[in-house]
Length: 365
Image 1 (cartoon, helix red, strand yellow):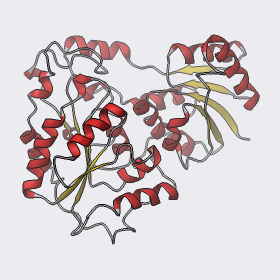
Image 2: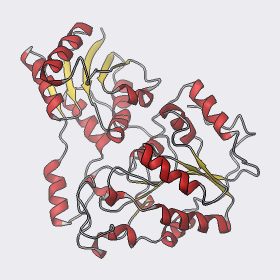
Image 3: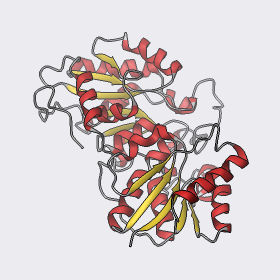
């Protein structure tokens, strides 16, 4: 008999992507289980190819907007399936209200423990130690409901054949003779205290170009970011703009073909790590110990100035607190030379001869 449960996680991009390892782990360990996940349609590519997972996309701007909209959403979900339990992986007002409707109807509800007290203690005390990763917290929520599982090794993300073809078509326009290193760059994040700056990336590109043959692919989103990425693209002929040219599924397919991703603490960091790609992340106002680090990546791949070097760091859990300096000092102190030396130290700039002829070199999921 198939057991059917409901899971809730509506936003944000990076957080939604981190549900994938937990969902895969639970479904792999429970072959009689079927999960319906309520999330936004834009995030559908994260869940491609996962068996026994159904996606439900609420219309939060119209039919499911506001309190009465949540009542309609509850009724729509009730009509879809008779769920045995509800797993709230979000823990915000909207999902708490929706969960309450199910609870009142007699369904057990299990809500994520975000570890807010632990994070607050770390932030105030600066006594930094690694807390549970977000993916582990998601898995713990399923475990509380009686659905066990173990998070395996990456890659966790799959993509369609169509997305692979589109990514291959994009790569075919790049001169990749002599198998150069293919490096993804994601210079932006949601909040300013998490952004190193395009000038620092220019310095890093120059350092890499002096000694290595590489092609750089720029990732990001939104009009402002794309405009800045277009300016960065002009800096060197081996820089290519991905943002705005491919959809999310196609970008994931392209990420799967990278040799290396260099990213801020952002969703692109997570997408790269979840794809099993070596990922160097650069940290400023936030800190990987809060549990948002790149899953499966060595701790030394998370680059930052020591928190002891700047008493105000980390200044917030998510990066939303304005910096007390005109520019984030923690990021200003991290020099391009230090990042470059780390790449050399970890042998991440060695040319790899894994790729076959162009057109067949896309890594299939």
